[in-house]
Amino acid sequence: MATSLFIKLGFTFVGIVAIATLSGCTQTQAESSNTSTAKTIKIDGSSTVYPISDAIAKEYRNSNSTANIDVQFSGTSSGFNKFCAGETAISNASRPILLKEAEVCANSGVGFIEIPVAFDALTIAVNPKNDWANDITIAELTKIWEPLAEGKIKNWNQIRASYPNKPLALFGAGKDSGTFDYFNEVTTGNPDASRNDYTASEDDNVLVQGIEKDPNALGYIPLAYFEASQNRLKALAVDNGKGAVLPSREAVASATYQPFSRPLFIYVNSKAAQDNPEVKAFVEYYLTHAGRVSKLVGYVPLPAEAYRLATIQFTRGEIGTVFEGVPQPNVTIAELLKKQAVFQLSESEKAEVKK
Image (cartoon, rainbow, N blue to C red; front, side, top):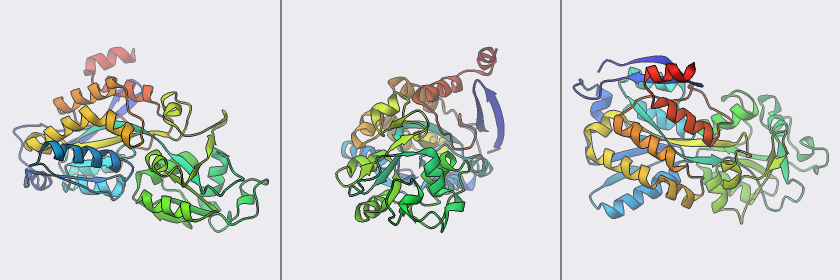
């Protein structure tokens, strides 16, 4: 398959699109590995998205006893490495695919279909025995997590003078996690820039357990993991300069919980969807039930229009991303819908919109 990567201009976004013919192509080695086990659907990637994909896979298996779906999590970045190598058919992601990852996929002959499935409210959590902190500012989070804080910001009273002189125990995402990239983009302006002296894991359950056991803990975790443990954790309201707001589904829907509201995705190997009927059927099932299941596991479902647009994109086999190849803080549900809608337009229609 001859595949290239180029930047396509559109209304309010730059889309990265891998040009691929979905039929009549010579398979690359990566594509062959995707289709060699036609009855197996391998899913890996984000631990944030894992609860959605795992719950949907369990439902699908219950209604289809012959389905063989293997859902794992190793972090968004690690998941994309496997996906672009052709080892998985679907990749869970808590951030959009990066430019360097899209280039690897293109060079490997792996065309991807980007499908938003829900919204998360990344939650700043502390131990419930913490009776001094109820809110936190973005500037304070930057002060805590920037690389210069390593070995220096070690006590609570260094965050805010009114806080007690108690040791600060930090918990956060590991470097293979898309949450790591997103959180750093918000707090330090660089997805790779973070202090290293904290308990890190791609498994959000490890972070929950760490915060639960340490009265001096502070960490960041996805909303679903907080909701499942809210009797054991305490959320801090986040103040981005417009007042402190607690993470909630309502705050995400109203676009008031910013900048820690973020879209969640699955990426589907287009060749696997074409060649393996089980992949196609499972993704169609996923899109039909994503809204309900997302809410069930603790995330914010997208409007029906978002799933309709995603279904059209999947049915057409439209390859590419509507993002710029970087984490995207402050994207709202309304903005995501606009990006999806523009992606559906023809080049001439996009030219008209740009006018």
